Amino acid sequence: MQKQYDVIIIGAGCAGMTAAIYLKRANLNVVMLEKNAPGGQINRTDRIENYPGFTSIDGPTLAMNMFMQTQSLGIEYRYGDVINITDKKDYKIVTTDTEELTSKAVIIASGRSPRELGLPNEKSLTGRGISWCAICDGPLFKNKDVVIVGGGNSAVQESLYLANICNKVTIIHRRKEFTADQEAQNKVLKNKKIKIHYETEVVKINEHNDKLSSIIIRDKKDKQHTIKTDGLFIYIGFQPVTNMVKELNITDSNNYILTDENMKTSISGIYACGDVIKKELYQITTAIGEAAKAAMSAKKDIE
Ligand SMILES: Cc1cc2nc3c(=O)[nH]c(=O)nc-3n(C[C@H](O)[C@H](O)[C@H](O)COP(=O)(O)OP(=O)(O)OC[C@H]3O[C@@H](n4cnc5c(N)ncnc54)[C@H](O)[C@@H]3O)c2cc1C
Image (cartoon, rainbow, N blue to C red):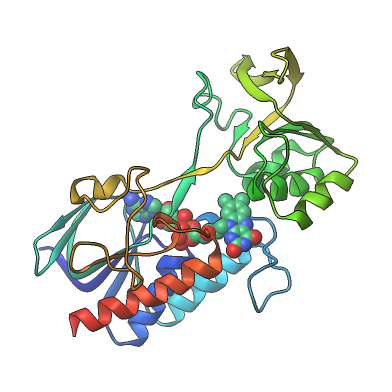
């Protein structure tokens, strides 16, 4: 028999966990479905220094604190890779890779995943030199040379993290200047272990014995250079995780979910919050604020 809930939350990142806390405290029957570890992108972050209440905290600790709060409230947490949501008007069916659940409302908090360079052996070398998470894999490259691709906040922050572990960090950035916070940029520019190539792109990834061995970069004069490296960390942006809502027609042309100011989508009983929605600022503080609103909208509508 299908399990029935008041609200099913898809994703247990900071947005999903916040929505769950609000709903459980409002005495609703709620479940969080998560396909990885709770915490989402926060788990990939070395230092968070703009989340009020903590001058500086590492991402996995903040994620675990949030998860422990959900568990202390007795919120149900289930493993599940959500592959589809069906709108039956009065109720919704959520299908995961292992089961089907039903609810009166669904909150989508499935966040974003890193964008790929699109080079041939990028996927096959993931875990063999290529990484998408400095905090997870950085220690594997202790005293080695690594390359980071990107110039936004994630690339710049994580290059500082890697510079503490690795011998040398080379940043490859396709623009003239970074787009990251000025404070993080200043730290990178002062760090002697970090070398920067502006207006440069990675055009080829080379392997030797099934492991990353070097990359080829192309500069603005169209000249190619080879950089030998043990690790390649890719931070070139993100894409929303919305494959499970393809048939619902609630996304924009870039696949971000469209909501109103109360986090309602165009379908009654389906809400979205956090990095998966179209908005200006993708941060923890914005994600959790939207999650609280999504939860309260769902509560009101159910009542
Ligand atoms: C390297 C890095 C550094 C950052 N630094 C900061 C910072 O210093 N300060 C700050 O405020 N923000 C920072 N951010 C941004 C911040 O982490 C995000 O804005 C925030 O985590 C978004 O939370 P979310 O819950 O919306 O999404 P996510 O954290 O992406 O969580 C979504 C969750 O949904 C799950 N999920 C996805 N699809 C499915 C599915 N089909 N079925 C089940 N589960 C699913 C995922 O596994 C994930 O756990 C950083 C991000 C990165 C990557």
